[in-house]
Length: 305
Picture 1 (spheres, rainbow, N blue to C red):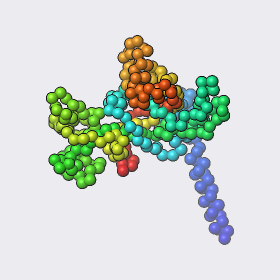
Picture 2: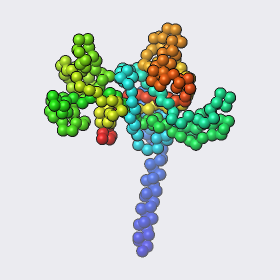
Picture 3: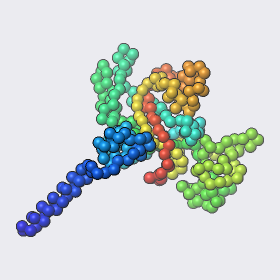
Picture 4: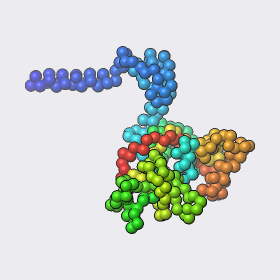
């Protein structure tokens, strides 16, 4: 019995030491000279204070906030974008999107406006009428992914059966079937309604003067496996719709500051764009919106179903 107790004590001691060593700072570890996230030089004081560090203090803060908000593995959610916005994303011109908050704050009046603050990685309304419970953005936290839903189509043979890019039948369609995206196709003059498919694109093999005359599938019906664009959320905040700045208008619409002459024209363009989608009444209501900043990342599908 004594031998069993001694053996158990030794195993417990080994486990304890292993757990402690996992959190013990290795003072002999060599710190990186450049941040692996932003590629900026890591200051010498940080390299000396945090042996073995691989990121600058700013990037490390973003990583820790992302992990805190996420509380687990990366989550993916689909989001609809129209053709013009998809083209702007592909060109690297669009890096923001605004979506109306479903639950607008109660008691939000001119004389007692609602305010919002960050609490433990989430958001909270507060003001004259008290405060709300903490809530999170339904589209994800920093570090989560958004897969773009856009208008698309599967190619088929004369009988309408799905085929791949080598004209082989693909039973039932799916990830192996050839697919195209309306944002990257165009109707050229004299094509009589046919859609010209680009000869070369990163999402398809090379083709020569291929045209499409079928119907398009609405973006809302796009499955995950058909998406070609994945976005990583880099920032989330809440603000009034009309509180947008000229710089953010450029990030939303996908243009440059000097495209607006005078500068006030940019706000007019933003107003007209919003009204064309959500209507005059919504613009006048000036709702609270989610402001989601993002960057394009490799389209790795963890769950293609």
